[in-house]
Image (cartoon, rainbow, N blue to C red; front, side):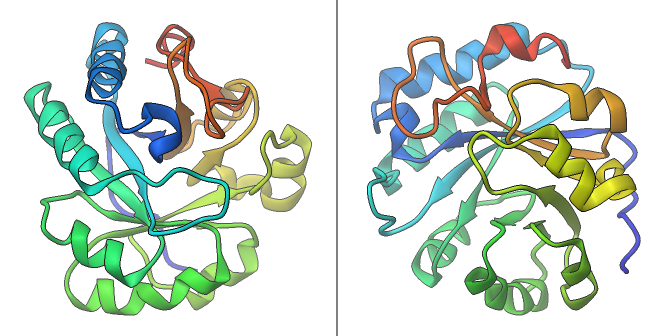
Length: 214
């Protein structure tokens, strides 16, 4: 198994979702980034992550224009921005930006993109739903993920055990896993109080809720 990377400051990855959460609306993007900035104490390293795909049934795609606007808005606040990529076209698009890493979701059909990204010198953070496949992948870091919305704490612990101290993609309704395992890499969904859409369930945290870990 690859060792965890030497990353001495805990990294929090906030998943701002696809077009579902922001509705591709610039005012909403502004409010999301400003909401984060209001509760950010500067004690943790934070990366904003969106989801880029061409088509996923029943989900609104984030437009390239909206991503570009969000990227520049976040940069103005001192935040790095990246995305989960779901196909070759969105990978090609994201390569136009300076991003800290490419995120690969816990889907077997997406792992094929990892070798090329690594070969081109890109960092890759990959979510895994089965810890046994970690040995078969190359990556910068991995996140233990239960791809259910919401997911049960007990399922994370039964599937991953002590590996949760490396990284967690958290789909539970609170920060129990974060506090217990103190992962080096931690991902959670982000929303506003009035967010709508598929990414705004109980597994997604508001700025006020994030105060608990920031």
